[in-house]
Image 1 (spheres, helix red, strand yellow):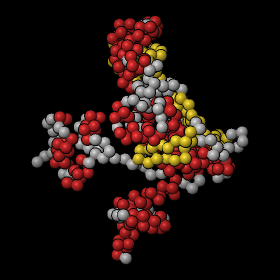
Image 2: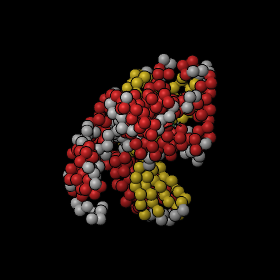
Image 3: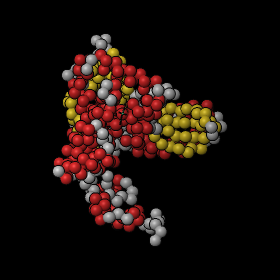
Image 4: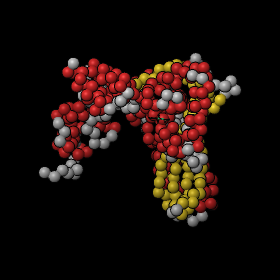
Amino acid sequence: MTKTSRIPGFHRMAPRERLAAVAAFAGLDADAVERLGDTGNLDAALADRLIENVIGTMNIPLGVATNMRIDGEDVLIPMATEESSVVAAVCNAGRQCYENGGFATSLSGTVMIAQIQAVNVADPQAARLRILDQRAAIQAACDACDPVLVSLGGGFRDVEARVLETAGGVMLITHLIVDTRDAMGANAVNSMAEKLAPSIERWTGGRVYLRILSNLADRRLARARAVWRCADIGGVAVRDGIISAYHFAAADPYRAATHNKGVMNGISAVVLATGNDTRAVEAGAHAYAARSGSYSSLTRFEVTADGDLSGSIELPMAVGLVGGATRLHPTAQSCLKILGVTSAERLARIIAAVGLAQNFSALKALATTGIQKGHMALHAQNIAMMAGALGDEIERVAAALVAGGVVRIDVAQSVLADLRNS
Ligand code: MEV
């Protein structure tokens, strides 16, 4: 029988029924079906409401980083990631600046931007001013969209209009500037943009197409800084190696992409653990890293007046406490409780500190022993498991791989065979 991806009524099926249909399509065995059907700490019915066509859940390890002191308070950091060394990197960075006070953070605001795209505007410069003249009406329309947000101190803050030259002609882009407080804000600002679209068409005489938030949330910049004393990090050569690594990333997009990937290793892990939108934060971070026109580093490292290492980070951080998965996923709720956060602002600031911590440890490892040494212990365990090691065998095979200096699956298989024969 030829396989078909046209499965009538798939979206109306229960997760178990969908799983059976998928198992038949893909030839999954009973074990695989059993495993996929075990949704772990996320109720299947809830999973089925969060996204479409659910058949199961995907579990990712949740680790907790220790040693983090942020704005004078000790914090345990839950991190959801599949990558080894990411949690350890934060613990190490936190430990090395703990005695010196840890991290100091701030947030520029909880303000999001929604864009409304108008095309075919005959007089875009004058239309721009006509929009700005309507500030009061725009404010009233935006705030009427979300009275709860307004009652919490949020709502419309400003309107901007930009005349944009594009390959498809001149466009008039309206920005709604909205304080979304403890919400990430996508739903709030998208509703406002959609509501205003007909008025924008009337005022501009143009045609509105897109009405959507911007992920370049540059009114919601999270900042963190820390000073690592030279003596605590292994001396001047280590300090200078880290600063040189930063200069490399600042000057070269090829290196900056990897440098910032490391930053996001930490950031995305906390964003995911708290049920927030990893892609929104990632898009904002990378767009911000390219704001000068050339993609560059999200962090900076320099020498303090005392000769110590000063590190800092600044990036958009659109995270909330009241949105969909954050509110509904019980693990996300527990992670927020572990973090002890009661505002989106505190969460954003903690996440920025984690990004800086992650980057510090990556640069330190890269500028000294190299990244592989730290990776190897856990990597060797993964390879041992892939070779079929079980229980105690995993540690023993991994230890033999590390001792032998070659961490490869064929070597692991032969170590395992020897172990079982002995
Ligand atoms: C690996 O996931 C992240 C690093 O490549 C980051 C970096 O190079 O700075 C180690």
